[in-house]
Length: 343
Image (cartoon, rainbow, N blue to C red; front, side, top):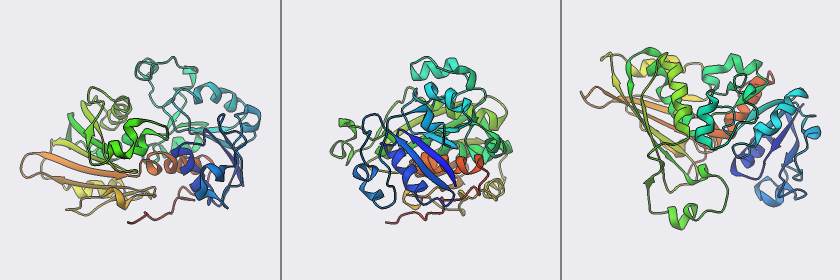
């Protein structure tokens, strides 16, 4: 059994990590930390884990965490980078679910996240944890930067088109919608259901911090600079991301469904859907799946892609466990076979 630790286990992402890891056949949760809840039994904060997780929260301690084979950071941006160098020096592998190591241009990261990077020397080493792109590198990595939720949905949605060179990389639009859990588990008037319910809005229309991460991914896929317009929206649901993506065809007449089917034929967690499909977020809720449909809109030359994920699973904790499995030499799908919850 591999020993794993979780730093920052009191948020929604930490709760999802606990839920998934509690039934993982090859790992033992050795430690889960929270400065504010140290000493509190996990099951008191998360009653759904009663009988599955018997640990108490503890204060972060490098020596204890360094005894783990792998540590997840489910912490706010800017936290992992302060402790990761010491853990790596102790031989512990790390999956960071925040954004500390996602963007390779450190100056760009500092501009978007409003702080100085504590260990810029590790940014180049960190492997971007999208298995559908970087599987081989993830297997060998000491440090994996788990992708953001919007970047996962958008990247997987546009990747086949850009790799195949059938759309114009200078004209890409990503219209993303997220449930309120994407903003984290904290007191915020704007996230109250009475504020969010019966409403729908865009936010960060002038630029969202996931924009540079998405653009970085798409630049690699296209092997050239892309021009992306990305606007996120908040919708009155708890879980889920739906990304409607638009691109202009360069090669009309290509079999778009076949392009997606070939690209994702061997991917256990990407489901290219039949022609005419409109994937719903509820069909992936609680699962590690990304479901994708692609179509043309009449004779406009515009390709429309619909990509749905659970923001807390394939968009966060599930993908982190997928990366962990690869890093530890395990079957990639272990612990991730949950069927989506319906209704």
